Length: 225
Image (tube, rainbow, N blue to C red):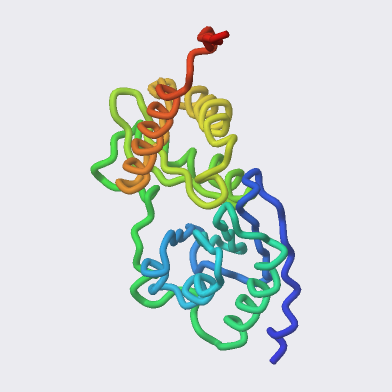
């Protein structure tokens, strides 16, 4: 089958733990992205499920024409790449869909509804037309989580989720653009899933306890003669 001869291009992302794979064919059936952070969640995508079988895979983001894979910190790309290439080619050779019927019906976060105010509609339009394409170029995506009291809540996905420059992306990129075009926006904040929020809280507690246990730099050791 000709699809066995896919030329898969690999692009680096701002996140050293994420790589962007371009198979040269359509990936997600719509212009939106679909992110899977566990093998269980990937059950709605034959492609993502196949990728999660590879040891070291932490997350998969399916975009219109790309696949972003995020690995565990201690995993090595050199060992994972051959299996990732093979899994992607095997999927397209199998004739299976990228998303099952259950996965295709996911609601679009930026779909403008009758309940949306004029400001929210403008924010969603900006995300779709100006912000999302740029973020997807880096192998990531953003999800609109809400707008309240001038603050836009966004969830970073894919390569942008754990990227060291995620705060810079939010503040210097997305926030500045939204505040420029939508005066009602006063700030942009990152939103987290429940499990991510718990993990962040636990990490902060551990960090605080470790700092508390550090000996004071001014302390001296008494020497007995």
